[in-house]
Image 1 (cartoon, rainbow, N blue to C red):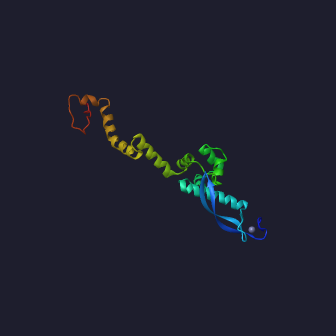
Image 2: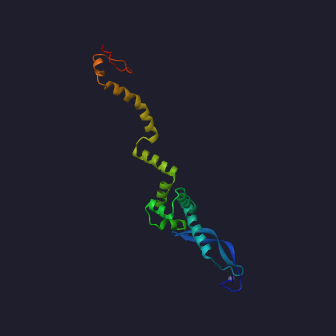
Image 3: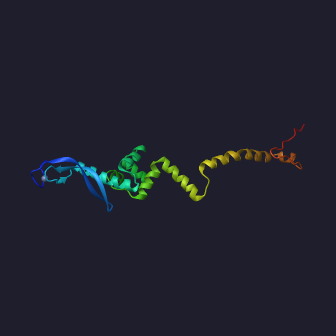
Length: 185
Ligand SMILES: [Zn+2]
């Protein structure tokens, strides 16, 4: 490919440091472009331009703690979902997941939703935080409470058994003992 600017040099693929502008922020990006070996003029092929868009978005995402293109793709693939199914799952427009993976930066709230709906540790952590926030016992300690309560329930049902109350009339039993009926001959 001949240089479009000087018409003498040759355009060669070369890794170039560029400054992308993502969401109003300048982001340094190292990406491949076609660069003139004579005057330094550079252009991008369609494929290079696509890669540049993704690299720019990912540089921004990394800086802001957002899921990168690779992580977004992984999240969707872990769920074994097409772009369409993933969009439906997240209740967003059908084009959105495809756009994110092509370099459109998802906003913070959407990033959170994707994590909560695709990442088990993130979903669990959210439950833990929510329990703490609402002041309810965690699921783990609730299970323990049920185990402790079970013997007490059994005792209660014996007390309620028909006939059982008669034999205990006027008798104070030590705790842990339950009344029973004498066989009536
Ligand atoms: Zn040139």
